[in-house]
Length: 266
Image (cartoon, rainbow, N blue to C red; front, side, top):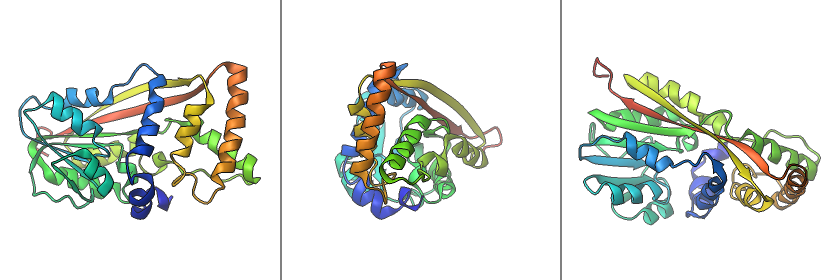
């Protein structure tokens, strides 16, 4: 599990640039119902102007749209990867989610979207979000639920067994910080937490997009495996499944935690 949160793997391989992230995002064009996660996040931001900080901004997908649709906001992107921070556009900076380079109460809103599972200590990251949030500010956390993409995990495990003859555990980011665990952390840090579940199904008509998705994770779930052999086995399994059923289906279940102060100001 360590390589899912290891700085050298994240910065040097998985998120050196935006290509792997773009590949993983692209498979959701097959999702039903369509999910506009950026739009869902935008809808939860307060109407007033102020500073919004995207912690773990990736290649700037959220930041770019925020800047385009809410020009009244000052949007700062922060990411552990220099390559990702550079792709976000200014203002952006390299930063660790557990040591944000901002004073107490500096941000009117903070976004923490699909990144807590890459932080070695998610609780410390949530505590930092709470520290930097203004007293009347909002924190939005997004993560995958425990049942998200379980079919993908099972496929990779079966393919790894077919390629190596060894049945091994497949590490998954949700084991480290699922939506459910993130909610526990948020409720301990914020007075009011509202959970929005966004469940759906991804129905892919051919093997290619699924194989590209799997290949984009070779630095993490592929660690210690003959990845090309495993991908070949996965292709055979997918081809057979699609020939029998007409498509490959997997669960998509993400959620947003809307965190604000409770009546007691906490």
